[in-house]
Image (tube, rainbow, N blue to C red; front, top):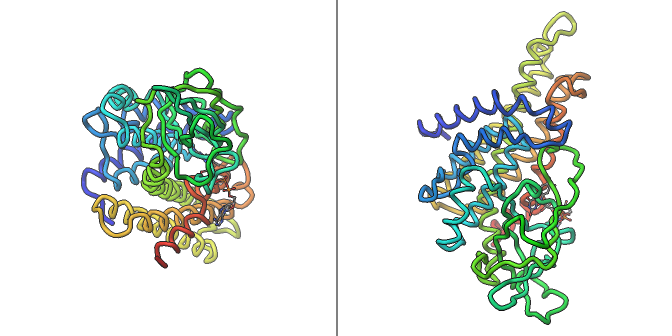
Length: 383
Ligand SMILES: Cc1cc2nc3c(=O)[nH]c(=O)nc-3n(C[C@H](O)[C@H](O)[C@H](O)COP(=O)(O)OP(=O)(O)OC[C@H]3O[C@@H](n4cnc5c(N)ncnc54)[C@H](O)[C@@H]3O)c2cc1C
């Protein structure tokens, strides 16, 4: 799918930033499990921290195709950075779409500038694929709500200045929380709220520069004006925002796959065995051809899903799930192939492909696993 001249110019700018500013931090930040805050400042300078925020709050107000293109190119530099950016955008999107005018005015202009960083807290230790079974509660107390519970796997959780939190609105005497997602609502919670504590960083297989923690809410009080949706509307709101998010994750998987392919192409041209570059052996050539085809197919599905969202055309949820399902599994395959093309060297930290390989798997897990995407696709097809 052809990009417009503006989209192509944005793609080139972000690719340049990814190669010159993001990629040099890749190895060290992975080793030290540290987020590159300087890179975040650079994303803000490029207006990318306001990517999905309306122009009236100083945001970029990108269409979905542009959003996908930016995610792809940032992930070409580092999946951890792209993940942080897309989660920040989930938070700004929730505030922009569901917050009232005062709340938007109070938070969005600064978030567009990059800080406070946003987090999106839906998952819990016992409620991942099925968020309707969350046990975090919000109990009304006069003009305030009191939040109690634990959220898990929260990207940007320790870096965040503001968290969008999903909880079940409960009556004061309800115990235990009601089953199902019927009462879920959504709150904006400042990260310095009393009673909100940050857990230890998760030690992860990949995505190690991304900040992933649990957040515990112990009697956290927020005013009613920080409630983003009516009780009972929170889960639908989460799913509609995540629908756009899935296109972003699909695009990140494409960017990671492209990065792995480019490394493999370079290595195949320079590495010699049996007196010739390994890129002359047919099996290596076919692997490279398959890698290209996988990446390109993922890109087309992703941009088509984004285009449908922009056009309000067809079943965007089906298209987003198909793109996320395919592109993330392709990223796992393509990064594994890139390691194989590198032989033993690919198994070491001398080349970034080992990190790409470790990073890729998470794209099949977060924002809905591959199995959940297949459930969505089948449901849409059979309905
Ligand atoms: C690095 C990282 C960052 C994350 N960031 C965030 C974040 O910022 N905010 C947030 O809210 N969450 C975040 N998540 C959570 C993520 O969205 C969940 O991990 C994901 O939704 C899966 O939930 P789970 O881990 O509880 O797995 P489970 O739901 O326990 O699933 C376990 C397995 O069972 C399968 N399964 C479950 N139900 C079904 C079914 N109905 N049909 C078929 N198979 C099924 C799953 O596919 C999976 O293979 C993050 C996760 C990771 C790893």
